Length: 536
Image 1 (cartoon, rainbow, N blue to C red):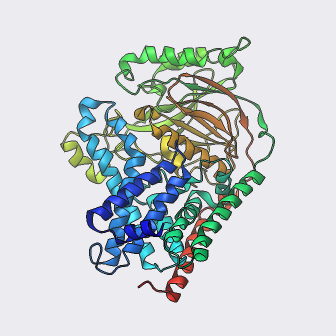
Image 2 (tube, rainbow, N blue to C red):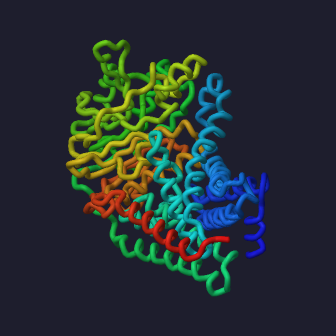
């Protein structure tokens, strides 16, 4: 172990960059659907040794300790994001004749940009670096802070945050009810980086202390999770019977207004499908849920489609569906304003309520204003076929659905943002997530998306109801237990009860305070260690 550590620490130039890139890529195996926690430990251990090498003043790297550390962090981050997000390239092939040329820029460009966050994290860690155990806390401080920044700056993109390595196991994820995703990330770094001590400690006893404490910490997290999980299933909300429809409709030329009738027939037929010899189809449900942007037309401006829905729905059954909607232009503007919405439709075909997506996907749903003119000048547009892209909703408020408790509505990747789902004021009784992951095919992407949405249920103590076009559709209870699901790449319906919400969690009440405290404690511990024992 000490020999391997020495080789990593003494590496330089392109060999050093290659080690960082490969170790970052290995760390991505800890994310869904693989969930290999030892892969993250190997990745972070090598990252610590790379930072140890940056302590050799001017000899390895650029001549600056911080630039050397940042370069190692960028290479590590590029490997991590490239291996974890390569599936984004599938979206460029949906309309290959228009977007295939941009695939290399998307697949390589986004990881290259995201890699600047771990670069900052490595540099922050280096500022508090020392020999011994203190550098583990410096590393947890640096990467923990950079992961929070990644989730908030430039609209935020907390996809595959390091805490997800712990946030996909049922027992380990329970700590998110206290720490949230970013708190789990700090723990993931501390636990995952601890084996670095085996290659650099002074004596066998000191070398083993940190890994042993990490194993104890991991076991403690699991024990807390096992204690927190009730033996019985979550009780259902009385009088609510959900039916989730998963059409598995390809995101290609078939999804266009010319196929309007075929799409509607498919939705109606699947929604009313019998699931047992005694099933009455949609008549067995109180609420039917369809996925994001279900229609290649504006539902609220299509009386025929609303009439078809009214014909499908028995008395007392309500449809909740994703659907684009449009508003008239504001004074002085031209053209309609389009929104990616969730709409509630009564059994009479009347739209009762709407929620407009607030956190839009850059380049997917709109082009950033400062780049809009330049990008359109070279013929580039957002992926969705909406003139000018979508507008963001104005406020996050509960969605009122007859027969349901207040609903915290989210569209697509809004569900990956910790602490940003629940409206202020009235506590909702569930999180609703409608999404269309068909852009990404049968890849790790939809699995990662579902795992992140599932963790929101644990953080907030609320059940999750998720309807996806091609999967994964599911009902999840407030502890993250999956009551029922439809796998990726199949069409069908899922009938399920709605689990009852539990009391607000520590995370609900305290938000990021626990995470901030953890990061500051790590910084303080690293600072004290660096004051006591400076690296050579």
